[in-house]
Amino acid sequence: MSPASRSRRARATLLLLWAGSVAGGRGVAVVTGGTGGIGLATARLLAARGSDLVLAYGADDARAAAAAEELQSAHGVRVVTVGGDLTTDAGRETTVASVFAAVDGELDGRVASFVH
Image 1 (cartoon, one colour):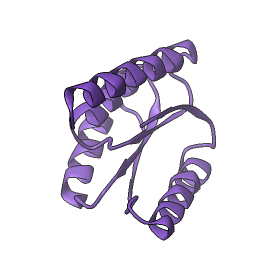
Image 2 (cartoon, one colour; image 1 turned 90 degrees about the vertical axis):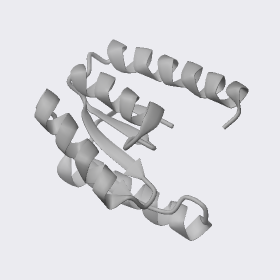
Image 3 (cartoon, one colour; image 1 turned 45 degrees about the vertical axis):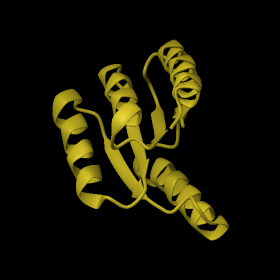
């Protein structure tokens, strides 16, 4: 990722963090790429504010499980992980459906933040 792309992503992340803090940390935060790097750092901040989380990730199930365990243990929030392939139309549709099924079925259906 280029420095300019990182800067744009960081600004977008900060804006969404601000939006989540306005919501008081209540509800669910959906974080794509939430099992590593900036995504995991963002998930940590949202969890510290009391948001339950859906962590969407690519293919590393072990890393996703470790991230979920860390966030649950450190902050006492509910965390659901959703793996999926966002590189194809079918993969995107399946992943998005899985994310919303997790929000509706396991996390009370209230999305307060969506971070990508």
